[in-house]
Length: 70
Length: 132
Image (cartoon, rainbow over all chains, first blue to last red; front, top):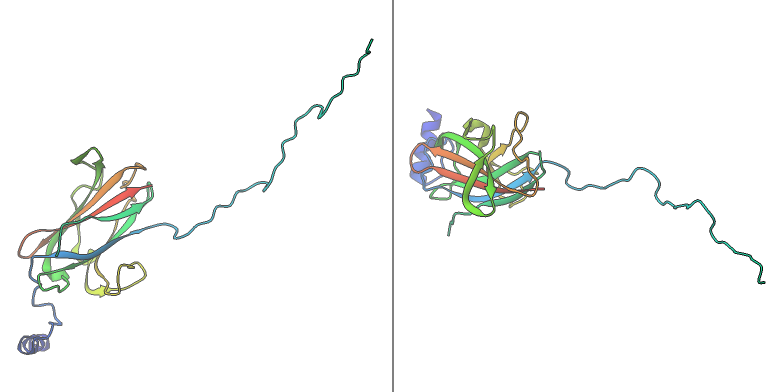
C-alpha cells in the first residue's frame, strides 16, 4: 500500500517513481557503453637470466704469421 | 541524436570481457529489470572483407540470460565504469569456462545482446571486440 501511495504522489507531483511500477517506455537506446577487458591494467616484463651477456668465440683473437722472408 | 553504433573494445585471445552499458527509454530514464521480459547474447566472428558475414562462436550463440543477473535497477558507479559519472545499468561478464569466446588473435568479434522489452521493439546492444 505504501508503494502505491508513493506512486500516487509521484504521479501528482511529477516525481520519478521509486517502486518501478511505472514502466520505462520505449523506444530505447544505449546512452553509454564500454568494454572492460579482464586482465592486467598495467604490466611489466621481467626477463629471467643474465641482464647482459658476452659472446666468447673460442680460438685466437689475433694471430701472427711469422715466416722467413727469404 | 541517437544513432546505431557499436561500442569498441579490446580483449585478449582466449580471455574474457565485461560488457557495460546504460540503457534508457524514451524519456532518458534508465530501464529496470521489470521493463525487460527476456535477454539473449551471441558472439560472432566477423569477416573483415564482408560486413554482412558472421560466424557464430561455439557455445556463445543465442545464449539465454537471466535479466536479474545483467540489469540493475539502480545505476552502478564502481571502478569498472570509466565512461562518465552517471553509471551503468547493464553488465555482463562473458563466461568462457566451457567455450572460448575470442579464440583468434588479430580478428574482430561482435558480441550482440538482444533485450526483449515488455512492450515495444527489441533492444540491441552491440560490442565490437578486437582480439589481441
